[in-house]
Length: 405
Image (cartoon, rainbow, N blue to C red; front, side, top):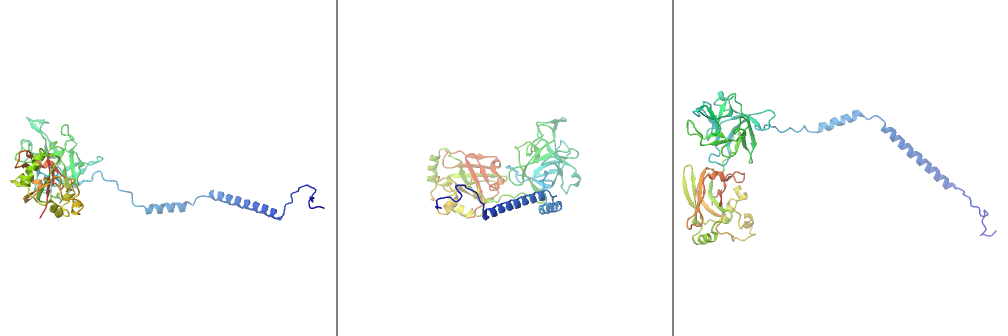
């Protein structure tokens, strides 16, 4: 038979071998194993959960957590405190106190503003009202007044209460007044508002007046609704506000372009900085000081590590840049404005908050008027960096510094 002749006469049949049988047996066994594993997992998921282990785990997690956060008190000032007038006025740093035989109008003790008479006040929070208190006398020298609270009494004419007169702030019993104490900017400063009574005194702020009528003596009395909304330092027992440091010099910087500036510059170049002078008035004294040609670079070097006022945004930068840039040699010493800032030696160690009035003039020419700040304290910046030593006038900024050249 030729090799080209098929052995099966052209009929094709499938004859499985040994390897094919082994592969079939392997696939059937693998499928059986997979099915058994899936069935075992399903049966395990139907078993009851180990509740004892889970509960212990929950207890462990809870035990690792700290105590729940304490909710902030709605009466953070509750307790005994002292009140100091913090607003920019002539009576800044003086304390809220009281005096007997206050007015011919009534026999209630009256609240006054004065220094050297420390007085404690007890703040009692009103339930459910955030930052609302009753204010009771807590002066240890007057235990008979400890049940008397701070309230107000209206001025009367012929026995008729008058709403167009400043009310008296008095200590009275069984006439409870509610006061809302609101945070006011700098640390420990607050505004205090009366929430009791009727208009116009309801919602009026605790303030002061030196024009109270019918007083038995010349007193600075507490009242409502005067002098804007003055702020108060409210401090714990034994504490008092930090008084700004004494100042030895004053820096004056112009606020924008001044009148006839070109002509003024000619006079300045001819006569020097002495053409500028200031007149300062305090409660006890009045004096005039002239500007001097002092080295401003030396001043900045001397006080930059000792006086935080150099960080105030109104502190005059050299060449309109950060003073440190000049000190590090990064910029030129040439000033764009040779007149400003100029330096006025005070020749005394002065507390700026005691100034009542300031005037500034040019003595060699008439082009610039005097700048008169009669209510000088109302212009003061009370921020922490200013430290009560930066004052904004209409034309000039006045900065008091402590410098020992």
